[in-house]
Image 1 (cartoon, helix red, strand yellow):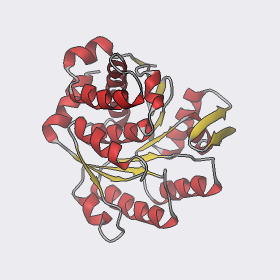
Image 2 (image 1 turned 90 degrees about the horizontal axis):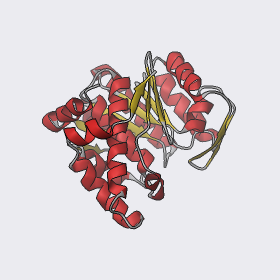
Image 3 (image 1 turned 90 degrees about the vertical axis):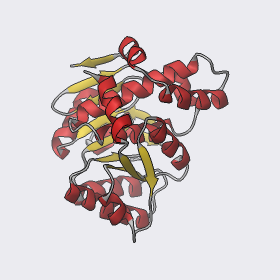
Length: 262
């Protein structure tokens, strides 16, 4: 896969990625989107989301700080994205932790065609009907083979499914495993939310959404590995992370990417 070629398309096209996202990480998601070369916009008002989605190249939905009204807004935006034919990335943050979260993610997916469903192992497991446990926004346990769980949900929802973790699983008609990343990525809040933004930026320029998500997570993970080399803790790591994303080049990606197609 020509990962750098997809990244180059982002930098050239500068796609607008519309987020309706988590208030905790909204600033980080905007910065990460921009560091990759795309343009972030965070419009949450019900009165403008349809119009904003109409000028965007991708829509990222994140239920991290959900309210019932916000879900209604997401559905309005998602229907517009379907009408326009742009990709929707849904980050199922905390599904399984409460009934509201699980119900509302299902409501979004029942009212609009979601192209990429992202979550940790327990979040995706619950959406796929597996026995799983979520504590807050952290995966606790899931029963079953994660690749098969991802493939099952992908088939049921006609979507690309992304399970993030030590090894990222991307499943659609093809399955990719991305082994890039570093433990330090877990030391800062928001790496999962930022990953959804990155996937949105790549999907905005690559219509093979499994390929887009795989390339996105490889680049993201490589930057995470590079950032750890000169970081003393979470503060310096976060700063270095943005810089390494911004300075990704073809040589770094080609020499460091750990992507397998199954």
